[in-house]
Image (cartoon, rainbow over all chains, first blue to last red; front, side):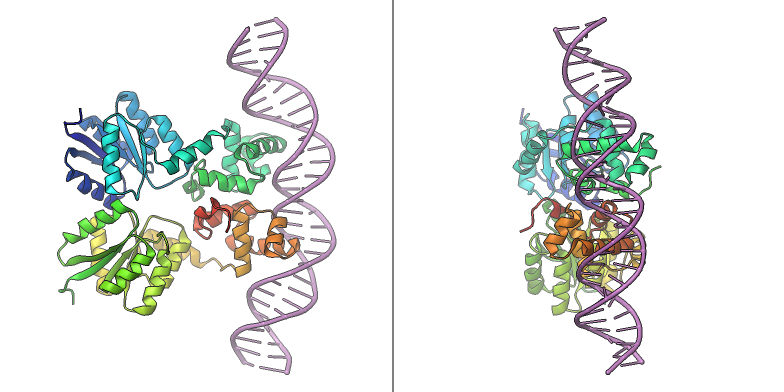
Length: 216
Length: 216
DNA sequence: GGGCGGCTCCATCAATGGATGGAGAGAGAT
DNA sequence: ATCTCTCTCCATCCATTGATGGAGCCGCCC
């Protein structure tokens, strides 16, 4: 191993970024970009078609998120190797991407050399998580998981609902809503609902985009 | 005009993105990239050195933000033309960038053709704001400005402070804090502090990054 | 089956937050 | 100058939120 060409699939919705990556990688000895995709669904068809050694993938994608893509493709091809390449979007996505089987996590803004070195390393079977991210993960480990119900309540809080509204929405009593809140405040390590909301956004537990839209 | 080469400066901190832009533009007839910068300070020195016709600039930059760079350079060179190129970071930055004198606003993810067409258009003296962004600006127009004091209070709210803590921090009475809150709730079009916090983050009035750090 | 732990649920009480009305100080306009 | 507008400030009253203690339920281990 290590002598044959590394076949790479690039999944990235931002046009210029994708073009930059492809241009950059195609001039590198021993690496060949065999396919490109601009959204999650396309990523899956391209993967099936080309069976790349390495898939370079953004997490924020139209149609189907990067985490779901990784999960799905690893079902079909357990040996598939993924390198997540993204701007920082909160700890939650990082965690889920690694859970789903990503081997490496790179921030946009890395140098070309880092990228190439990481591709070679992952192809050789290694993993690579940058120190800054490793530290966040370590922090996260200390935190407890929210129960499904607590998550429901947190989501409503982030969307600006009052306890009464949440009670109606979830069809439980207001007193119960308060219990869940009290519990999730403890788990998030905060003292009131406003801190809970900002923490949830910051960590990526509740995506910021969901704020614009009313719920369907 | 329109026959001479358009001299472009590219300011972008993400390495692969910058590289992609430069590679893309340098093969276009009539456009030449005369300089690159990876942060705001470097952007200013590069600008002074090369006096580009067009400056392509990201808003989120290390050391000095894109808005400040535009403001400063337009003081020195009122004819300088800026095209802002960024992922969506909230309405506030868009608004301020246009105020500072940016002529066009492009989202990363545009096609190469759009980018090139926009560069030519701006060089010819036109402006270009995509419909999606124009709509947001229109929405924003209806909203009132926050007073400095209201902004101070909002910032504290986003950072999870209680009214009592805010009062101490700003050295005013708790009752006064409540007045400011009441006023800013109205201006933001929300009904409680949690909604105010998420709205502030979403619109980019208070940057999300400020949440990690304690204040110096 | 009995016991145990986690999740969900509820009621009561103290603390916090939001609505309302109103006063003084400064900037700009007539 | 004085009028008016805006910003800043404050106090009182009612609504919402958060703390606390405790009950039923389900799945799991022994």
